[in-house]
Length: 155
Image (cartoon, rainbow, N blue to C red):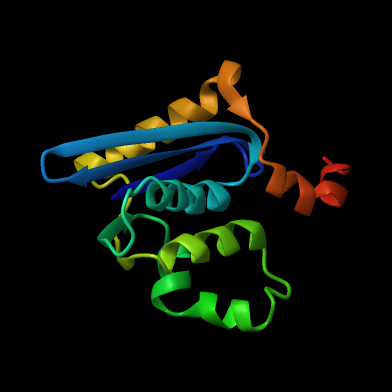
C-alpha cells in the first residue's frame, strides 16, 4: 500500500491518495475535504487503505512519506498516547480509528522520501492534490472541525 496526503494551506482544502497493490490487483482511492490539515490527510490515507482490505489478518506493507504517521507507529509513540488518553495530542479521532483497523492486520511501515521518483508515491501525491482541488466533491472533515472550532473563529 502506498499513501499520501496533501493540503492547500494548513489548514485548508486537503485530500489523500491511496494505492493498494496485491499481485495483479490494483485499487486507487482518493477523497478531498473542505478544511483539514496535511497530517490528517496523511493519516486518513492509511486508514482508508486498511479499511478497504477485505480479510482480517493480512500482511500489509505501507509505504508513506509521512514521518508523522510512520514514526508515530514504528517508534511506538501511539501506544504511549493511548495510555495517556491522547492528552495534548491532535487528531485523536483519526488515531483511534487507525488503531482499531491497524490491530486487525500485520502492518509494517516503510518511510520513503517524498517527491523522489517513486512511481506509486508520485501517483498518490497526484491523487491527493487533485482531490483537494476538486471543489465540487469536497467533504467536511468533521473531526477537524470538532477539535478546532475555537481556533477556526480566529481565521
